[in-house]
Length: 195
Image 1: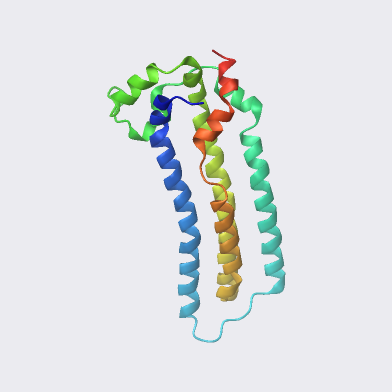
Image 2 (image 1 turned 135 degrees about the vertical axis):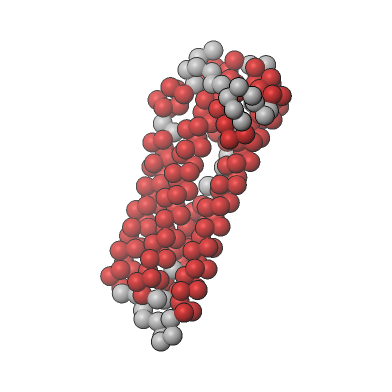
């Protein structure tokens, strides 16, 4: 179980991950809106998407979705995680976007709390970066399904071709919300080995 102090330190990172997750979901709506705008500007009846292009997009989407699961497992493989917890990280590694010049932290209270954490939690903090990276890569891969649908709209001018792709992308991203604390709790024993 993570200490309340560590949870407080993780709050900025959790907030940023949630904002990024929301942005990836919003992108699916934005692509759909742009596609709708493009199809409205086409005066003659929109041609249907070639079935060959549609089949290629469906296969590519399925491959990308399956690959996103494998990529996450690869990026969060035990050997990589073990390497990340061998040494404690600097407090700013948990919220670098919040710090100003390296000589002056904007959050000295969080820095102080970090220094008071148990050594296992200081080591565990090293897993934030690989977790965040894995999440962004997975969300990007899943968002690409909506992009494939958008390409179909550009090629064929038919909005209905995109909607299933956008819906699948949105659902796939929504099913992978950021769970930083749960991830760290699952790996606390790994960090304890190195303290």
